[in-house]
Amino acid sequence: FAYGQTGTGKTHTMFGPSESLSSPTPHTEWGLLPRIVDATLNHIAAHPEKSFQLSISAIDLYLWAAWDLVRCSWERS
Image 1 (cartoon, rainbow, N blue to C red):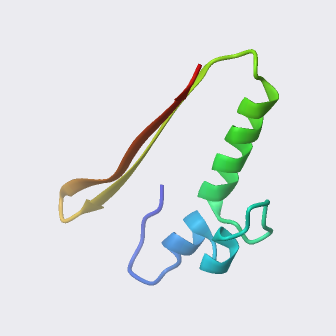
Image 2: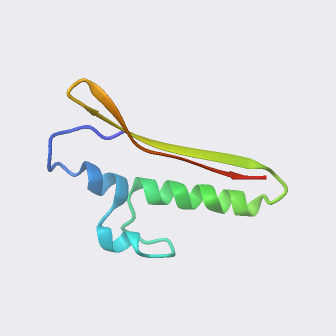
């Protein structure tokens, strides 16, 4: 959850600098979201005997309205 005025660093906190996002391996400047995704996918890879279903969404709350920015689902059996 990130809240604040424009230009206060919400996007930087969630994603990190844009240069770090092109790194295929963990980067020291990754934000929260890339770190969480990397850790989750590593956990799944470490447990091939289990079945997982992942979903992600991004909601923008602005002027009393909610906007679903991304909705995707990935399933592995």
